[in-house]
Image (tube, rainbow, N blue to C red; front, side):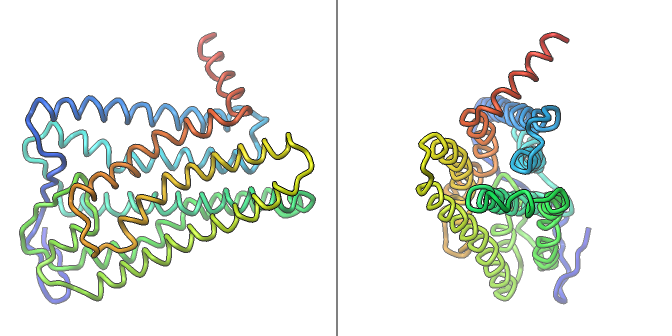
Length: 314
């Protein structure tokens, strides 16, 4: 497939994803390990989403946002892990030009949606703890529905332009990506011509989006913590801190490796570090999030027990 870009014709029709080069035996070991993590990630996030759907006690904005966040996690890992599992068993490890950029688009769109959902959840906790008397009037059903729609759609709108710009760069060869997914940084490095404008625009886009959402979340929780410290009841403080601790743990797992990776894409991170950081936020974080939210939340524990009891009875 030929793709025109900036006056040059791209001759590359597919890319080779190097992944984690090793012996065939170790590739099978990796396949087994990541198959288990992928299955556990799907089960954990599906359990939380199901608990929110079926338990009427969880039909509140906080849990509705959490349920949607869990569904996003399922979509997020599905954009990369099935293909990564296939490369462990493949000898060619190839991915078509179109499939590569489709993966790029959906992976980062879902990732951006997760960032927005973390902002929405931080805003919800700010209103509930810092403005408790006004919370029912502000967080109406209409606003909750609008935030849910915004959280799902915003990433797809934002990442359309970066994907189009990078896909229009001329790719004449080589076509080997030393990664396990179609990451934009190695893709830009494979371009025949060094387009500093595209790299600058992409870097600026990442800085504005990631630091902006991260600062918003930290600011919201800083105000929440100050409000919690002023609470007279020790029980209220403990409950509020427990909820905020879960959210902040997920925020830390999600943002720390991403900020290192994508705020400065031209900073020359070693290839192994890039793979490790990407693996952490794309595989490990979605696996840990259900544990964080379920282990520290009594209401979620009760809802999950109800689901498991129902399944056993049936």
